[in-house]
Image (cartoon, rainbow, N blue to C red; front, side, top):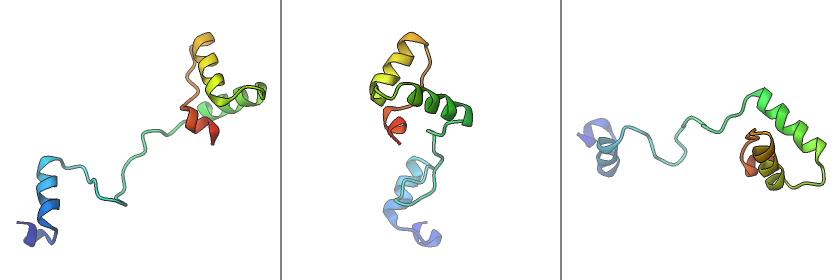
Length: 77
């Protein structure tokens, strides 16, 4: 069957287990997308608290306001 599809035997075996394409460079949805409103809220929080690191800011907003600003890695960007 792999020869008919023009793919390697290992690829065929892996695809039989799961239909998700796990090859390097394959396109996949990015689940970490944030809306424009979430971006603005995070930017505003960062600008209002310039003395705080993103990890401190994320913890503060989550504790005090119950608002998740995004991942710390995303806030650094």
